[in-house]
Length: 391
Image (cartoon, rainbow, N blue to C red):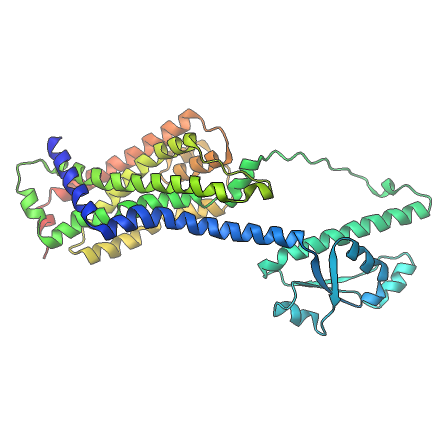
C-alpha cells in the first residue's frame, strides 16, 4: 500500500501544478453553477413577486358593455387600459399578457339574469403571462361567486343552496418540502460535479501518461499493478469528492440569499445534510472515477479520451435529469441502483423527509459493489502490456 500512496501523492502533486485544471475543477465548476442557479431563481422569484404586488395592467375591449364588472376589476387593483384593435395579434406579439373582451351581448344576458360571457385572450405558451392570466381568472371567479350569491339572496334563497360539497383542504407539505420542487435539480448538480471533478485527472493519469510515454517506465517498477491503479483512483476520487463537497457548500452558502421565505419555502442545507450527502456520494464518486479511468484507458491520446468521456457524461446526466423532472413513488429496490439511489436520498433530504438508516446502508453497499466490479475490469486492462504503448 506504500506504493499506492506514492502514486497517489505523485498524481495529486502533478494535478495541482496545472493551475488551469485546478481552477476549472475546484473553483469554476463548484462556484459558477450555484451562482448562476441562485441568480436565475432570484430573478424569477423577485420578478413574480413584483408583478403580484403591482396593479395588473389589463387591456379591455368593450369596457362600456359591463361598467359594474370594470369597476369591480378596478377595486381589485386592475389597471384598465384601452383594448387593442386585434386582441389575438396583440397577445401573440407579446404587446399584452392577457386581453379581456366583453361582447355587446353581455348587458342583455346580465339583465335577464342569464350567464354573461366574457373572453380572456392569452397565449399559454408565454410563460411570462401565466401569472397575469391566473390573477385575472381568480378575480373573475370571485366576482362570479359574489354576484351569484347576491342573485340568490334577491330571490329569497340562501347562497349555500348551490353548494353541494364543501372541500376542506389539508395540505401536508411543509415549507422545506415545497422547496424541493423548486430545487429539484440540486442532486443533478452534485452528481455532475462528481463526474466533472475527476474527469481531468482520470484522463491525465491514463491517456495523458500513455501519450507522454510515461506509463511504460511506471509499469517497469516492481510494483503490483493493482497498487498503481489504487493510487491513481485514489487521486481521481479525492479531487472528485472535493468538487462535490465544494459544490454542496457553495449551494448552502448562496442558498441563504434566496428569497424563499417570500414564496412560503425554506431551503435548509446544514451540516447533517452535508454529512449524509457526502456519505452517499462517496461510493458513487469512486464508481464514476473508476469508470472514467477504464474508458480513458482505451484512448491513445488526451484528446481521444476527452471525446470518450464527453459521451460517457450522458450516463449520469440522463437518469438524474429524468428523476428530477418526472414524478415517481420511492420504492425500496430503488436504493440498490447506483445514481438513482443517490438522487432519491438527496432529494428526500432536501424535502426534510426521514430517510431510514437501512436505505443509506443499501445505497452505499450496492454502489460500492458496482465500483468494485468496474475496478476489476479496469485492473484487467492495467495488466495488459498494450496499455503502456501509445502508438
